[in-house]
Length: 89
Image (cartoon, rainbow, N blue to C red; front, side, top):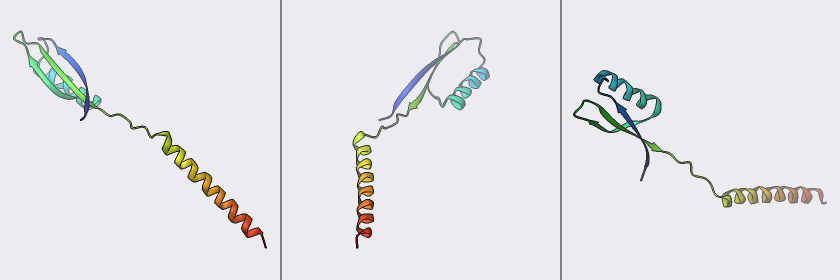
């Protein structure tokens, strides 16, 4: 299930409809916000709730790093053994 971050933007009643649209569009284009809810109050002010998805990086475990390290060590040991076998008559 995705997690979201929320931001609330209050727009006073003196803000025109076109200016409110421009403000919300700027948030959407430059901050990756999307409109979750818009409430228009009787006095003409607006409360916009914006949201954006939180993307978390998945960290690889140390076991993965250890496995790669063991494989690298085994490969080096195998190469050394082959080289020593080639030297022997």
